[in-house]
Image (cartoon, rainbow, N blue to C red; front, side, top):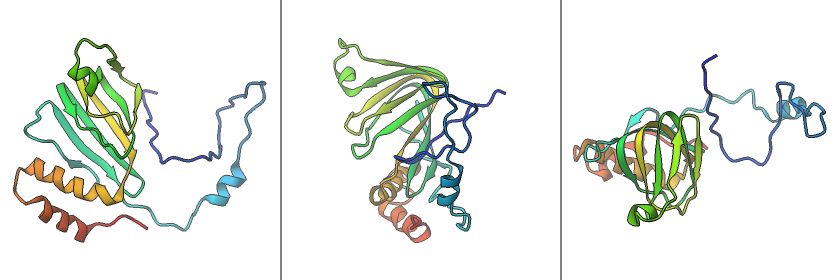
Length: 193
């Protein structure tokens, strides 16, 4: 009771149902379970996959209304927690889609077209528990309100480390150059095979 689970996972065209809470299909029959198929594809001998990084603050001091925390970055997933207090423009990532999920609070999402043309409508109201899919070609967007969100999307291994180095440089404002941070990260971490 009182627990909300946000399931974030990689894309898949296959789902094996191992438990279904007694749900029924459109004809009233219990939906089939796939226990044997699920057991066939689980690798019980594999070791735990450790994230590339976890819990890294990426907030830019020049953008005080936005706090970012990189929760997970591995070969499948990039997951960040965003905290918005007021308004913040967020640059889109033109190589991947994202899903925003509101953990707490409420606010609005405004695409770059609506930011530039305030006469246009199209703002999306966001409330706790709601999610919105942001297409890869959406462009920059603004989040406004008082809310905590998850931003999830697939990782792009060739881009994520250099972007992380740049974000860490912005967070530290010049303690090390982005190149030095990238070289340090590259020597310490790697995407799992």
